[in-house]
Every structure is written in structure tokens, then in C-alpha cells.
Amino acid sequence: MIFNTRSYRGNQTKRPSITTNEGADKKYVKISSEIIMNPDSTYPIIIKPYKFDVSQFGEKERKKLEFEIFNVSSQDLAIKLLDMPANMFKLKLPKKVKAGKSEKGTIEILDEYVSEEFEKSLTVELSDDAMTRFTVPVKRTIRIPGAGKSSEHSKK
Image 1: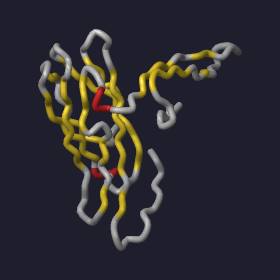
Image 2 (image 1 turned 180 degrees about the vertical axis):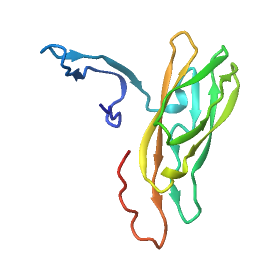
Image 3 (image 1 turned 120 degrees about the vertical axis):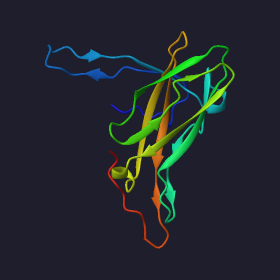
């Protein structure tokens, strides 16, 4: 299931059904999220840029992006990766960000995916009391002048 948040704002709850071979009754799972319009106002961290856009507009290959995580809380926070597409990116994520400080990280597209366009995401979890999670979009568009229109690639 993919939950596209483009048209949603604020607190959202979805209850998709799950069909299994364990009886005739449908099973449901509850997914809760908070979709924030202004990513500069998130708490307890701010991730800049809030979307990892590794698009390439020109001949020069672009496959790496540096980002920064600002801890706007009063406690040191450990950060761990929860989910990202397997074998697609190389991610350097700080293990901890001290209260009131920031740390840098990088995301790099692996060579096998440099020629592809995609929209993916990665999710991190913080060590605060709420075990806050952040999902960051990762996007790649390729436009090379003189090469005609970029062919539409399958979205892996």
C-alpha cells in the first residue's frame, strides 16, 4: 500500500484492509500520521532540505546530496534509519544530534540507479519519548539538453 500525502494535511488516520488465508474475516491495520505543510516548523528536529532532490538537469552527473539535521529540542537525540529502498542509496546519517546543534549527512544514489527517475522515501526514528519518526521524500528527475525528452522510467 502507498499512502500519497499530496492532498492531505494535519493528522490523518487510514485503516487499510488486509486479506489473508487465515479465515474469511478481513483484517485491518491502523496507520496514523501528521502531515506538516511547513517543514521548517517540525519538532524535535528540522531536516534541510526537507525533500532530498537528486535530480540532474544537464550533462554533469549528479548523484549526491548533503543535508543537515537541526535538533531544536532540549535533549540530545539519537537517530536511526528505519526504512529506505534496499540497495538504492548510500546514506551517511549522524548517529546523534546534540540539543540545540546540527549535524550533516549525505545521500548518494548507487551507480545502478543513476540513469533512472524515481520518487522514493526514507524513514528515520528519534530517541525522544515519543519515538518520533520522519519520512523524507527522495526524488530524481533527469533532463539533459539536446537528448530529447527524458524517457519515462519505471518507478521502482
